[in-house]
Length: 135
Image 1: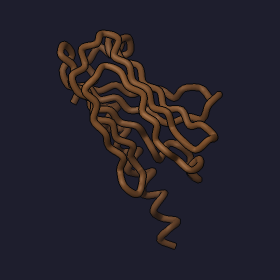
Image 2 (image 1 turned 180 degrees about the vertical axis):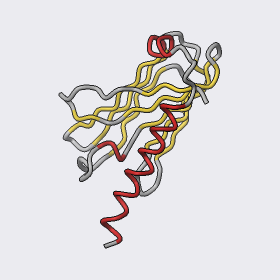
Image 3 (image 1 turned 135 degrees about the vertical axis):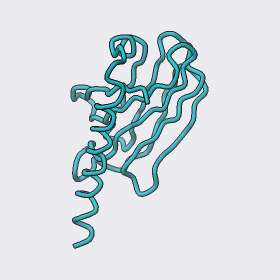
């Protein structure tokens, strides 16, 4: 019984997290953030996710990437304006990729502290939207 409740609770927590992202920083110019940052997370049938990040301005000092919803949260730091990270995933989650959002905390020289959130998608599927926020 408890195993059936855990994914539902996880999905609820992720939904609340998304609402916080959507409601925060409503006065920011999201177009500038969309034009500056690119993120994509693609699942390949070979059992891994390829996460790519690009800051077109080259002014990112630090990126902390987290993959939420895992038994142990995956976290890694980068000190560059672009990276590609390969993360092993044995298969597509039973409840879909929404339970494993990718969250980036970015420190940018000009734009300050930025947060990005997106979801993993399988190769050939459309890219999910990116949520941009300034805390």
